[in-house]
Length: 229
Image 1 (tube, rainbow, N blue to C red):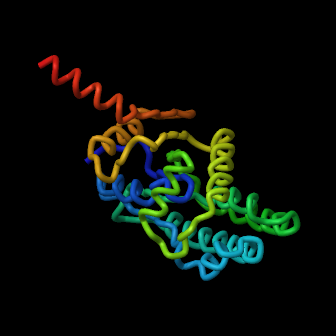
Image 2: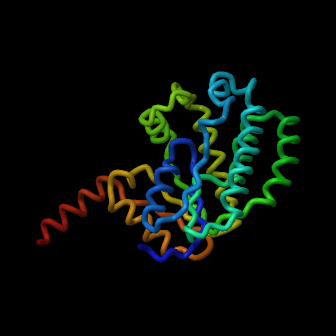
Image 3: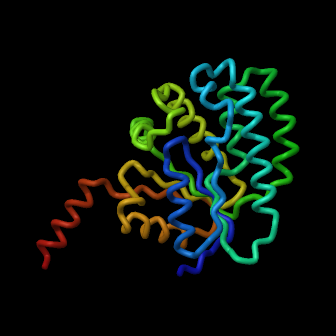
């Protein structure tokens, strides 16, 4: 078991980044509590992906209220069995989607409500932002095969990717660890997960960016190590 420097860690990233998988894997390292977003319970989501302009406001409002309710109940209440909490989203990220999908009047109403709710939810002590290229995100989305994500619009994922990068470029609420995940598979490769844990243990404040070696670099390192024996 690891001695973690933070008690409340949030994993963030665009759709398909691997937030939930990393959240669950990290929690297993310390028997931590896991708070996972209930995306599939949104009754408007499948219709939103078919017609974003028609169902954006309903979809966004449902997510805002559902996320607030879940975080309020699961983070505010004292947990006698878990000292660590890993969440695969934070309420503040909801605004990223709102700014992309809502029109001016809808966004004004949404923002007024979000500002009130955001103040009532505990903030994470560390945020891990999983970066990935749009191509990699689309591959992962297709691989997991959620019915409502079939034929995901590339331009939508691209706009989300840009919005996330902009959001976290200006993020200052707590320590931030940015990990480029294009070349790693922390689900299948134990060494990749161990490397991420090392990065978490090392950060204390500010922003830390981790760029893992490419597959080619790893192969070269293995060959050099083998030749040196």
